Image (cartoon, rainbow, N blue to C red; front, side, top):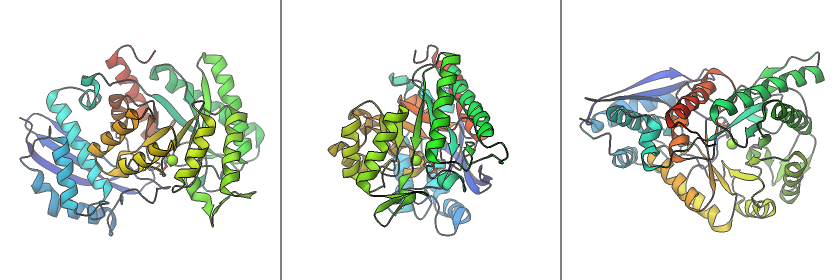
Length: 405
Ligand code: 2PG
Ligand code: MG
């Protein structure tokens, strides 16, 4: 039987040392538990991660208003259950329950259903319909912005192998991460080099110096491994968009100049992907930039789209971006996440399923990425809460047998 017999919520730690929630859902035949991550550079249009009063208030809401309503419902009715979460919350941004409580519930339903059916979560999400495909891991190797004070203004310098199964590409990214550290140590022999929230290196260098290092490390590791590893960026540009301009440590430039600057970086460093190069309301600027790069580089909207089907449709309508970042906790339910993926793929855009900067060892996004056939998964290069997903991809690869090659 797949009717919910028991639910439970508890407070657990995330990777930044903040409290977050874990939700458990049990049926007679199955069990699922899911933990919620949280962001630091959040988009203004995301659902509210937590209600006023924080994690404790979210847990209180769950215990008083949600738990009992779920008992007796069927975990196979994902859409119905997710709709119920929304109607119990009653707001349009999960501000009563908290998107993080909602997403932990929603993913726990799916895990519980997969467990009852005795199939891996990725197959439950999409593998049975033939959508399953292994995503390319996109890993952060140098970090700055809101994730690492004292580092670059650009939030993430990433790398991605263009093809190959996770059992190879995961190691390729980790090798670049290590080579980057060696290059930083050589460049700054007396400086302390630390790690940011996502396990990427943090150093007092300029954006271009970081790109030079990541590009040369990628080239070397590509030659050594035979993988084609290319650099990428998450600029998280809304974080330094002030008073109508993009304010870097060493320059302030207009929106038009920002587009030219991004194009220059794409060409100079042969970037395979740039996320959030413009601020989160500039749909028109995104359309202009995307038309100038064609398909040579993925232009990914994160804060622009916030995994929200309305915003994704608005972007698709005018050709803003050619790819969408997918973060389940930005929208609060698995159903809305899968709807966002469907709209994106139907329009010929690519999806990149993503972690948050504050993470837990929950592995669900590896299953979501593989289950929906996402082009890539952004989930760091190293670090316990990041390798939880990367190693799961290796297991999924074994399960699929064959991979993307
Ligand atoms: C992003 C994410 C993850 P955060 O901007 O893409 O890298 O950061 O979770 O802080 O929003
Ligand atoms: Mg981002």
